[in-house]
Picture (cartoon, rainbow, N blue to C red):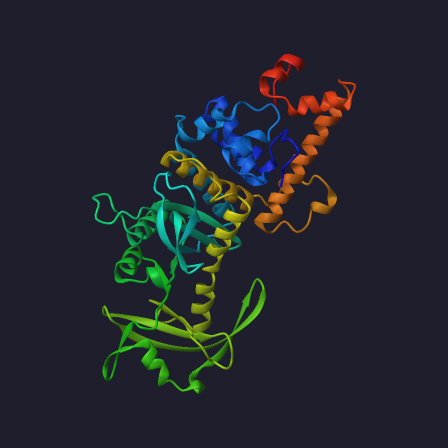
Amino acid sequence: MIDLLPIAGYPSVVEGFLPKVEGEFNKPQLKHLARYLTGLIVCENKTVTGINSSFIGRNDQSALNHWLTDSDWSEEKLDKARKELILEELNAKRIRRGVLVIDDTLNHKTGKHMEGVNIHYDHAEGRYALGHQLVTSHLVAGRFSLPVGFELYKRNEGQEDFTSKQELARALIGRAAEEGFPFTCVILDSWYFNAENIGCIEGLGRDWVAGCKSNRLILMPKGWTPISDHLEAVPKTEFKRVIIRTEDGERSFWTYAKNVVIKGPRRIRLVVSYQDETMEGEPKIIATNRLDWDTKTVLKTYLKRWKIDSFYRDAKQELGLEDYEVRKMRGLRRHWLMVFLAHTLLRLSPNLGKPIEWMERGLKTVGSRCRHATMEILKTFIDLIIKLAQKVRTADEILRYTLSDLKELKTLYQMEAT
């Protein structure tokens, strides 16, 4: 990532996107868009201050901050352009079937004066923490794994404008269907497995696969029985080994499947799995409306859920999903949109520019593509130094040029800043 070297250009993933939205922005706004996206991809410090200070010929940071929080441009139109880019790529590859994953993530914050910040339970750390909780939808289709939408969960129960996480999830599912994303199945974890959500999914003509808690009640000959009690009576010989091929190689599961009526009532297929042949500890329980699917199909489908966790990790570690200091809700939503856009551009750019030969391979991950973009920025900076060396005489003059602000550049060199 860029930390000390000034940025003198934009990576190819950003340059290639700008023509698609130039009609929605005036020239200064388009420049701020390009710089913010570039900063999220290549800068170590992904705050407004950090991004602005990284560029050659920078304005005062207030200009970039104003663009993010107050400038009159439509995030809806920008997000529409992002989604159209996804759909165009899927259509070009003739991908018609995928799965939509629903989950949430907590952006940890320390400041209590940001709009929408609240105390939420952090499942990853097993404790309550201050932050913004986002409910998001994610498309997994063919080789593509892409964020689709997000909504901020505001923990303000009892107020008129309160919207639960379950309602936000249904809104995201409905919106993805309306926008034409090609998903035939929705994947949920156990938190989102309830009658309202699966009713919404089935109402859209989609299937679903969901994590299921062991205390859910199923109808057995003796009446409504917790799944955990039923499993205690299932002989270990009923569990069969299933081998699933994943991106990380083959994985073995010891599984048991049964079609049951779950309290609701609703007929579903249960798949219970262990990752160890000793079959000790708590099993993973998966439910689906597809009574005809075999165990391997159910497991393979549910395993696609981890793609959204990979997105959260990449978005936080590589693209600054929670590295923001703005306080206004408008600025917060725009920052999250920029992260979604940056991730989308990196994922949809198989033909990246190749600044040096040894960078040609190994560009499968978001992190590797960020590093590739950094190399492009480095090459642009080297090109600038070569050009400057033809105009000025000393290293001090070159350094002064690269560290100057926009006003001084125009005064000293009579040329527009990059």
